Image 1 (cartoon, rainbow, N blue to C red):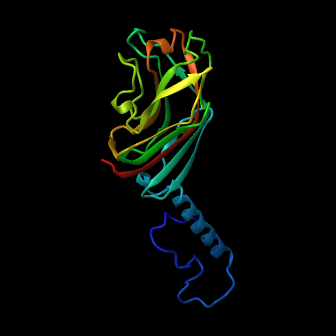
Image 2 (spheres, helix red, strand yellow):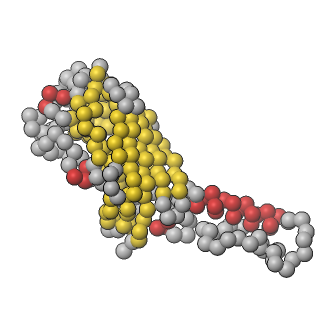
Image 3 (cartoon, rainbow, N blue to C red):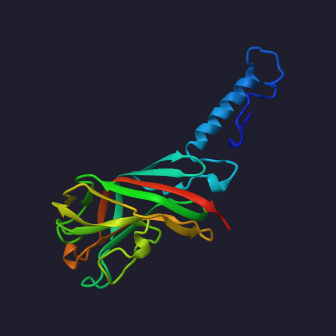
Length: 242
């Protein structure tokens, strides 16, 4: 026996029991089956999961080594907590190194299709939570300065040394992440200052982790890997879909 997503308050009825009229007796297996189904439905709803309506369902976590998710909330508002444990982001030098930043991007989470509102978002990376794998200046400099944020657009080559518009519209880039001996030398955090509205009805929106160097001296021309550890928290809802 299964229960649909909670729309009404369960009154105790089951296939063999009318709670309003039945005499009091010990529960049978069908009563227990209904009870378990109702409890499971409530637990799923507390994770924002509705099997009967895609608008009330969770997004999809990217298959990335070191990336895990915990979902909280309900069908109205979701809290998605992404934990990164040495998640690897490939960093590529810009086409023209003197004017184009070394950059990297990695898809983390795809929202359900629809009109999305991000009510709040936050990123925090602990001391030494960001590390250059190679460093030494052939790839990233051991003392590179970086900007890391989350946006609906994946970073690509650009004639600039900062994240642009939708590259960090979900979580504004934390600029000035300083590496010392290839690892970040402080706790780094950033948060969304105002609600973000975007249309993911034609194509489901993606939360991308984006990173850039802040100056040509922050990297050589050889590709490197940025290992990222920390937590990204997204508070969001789906208003509707086309």
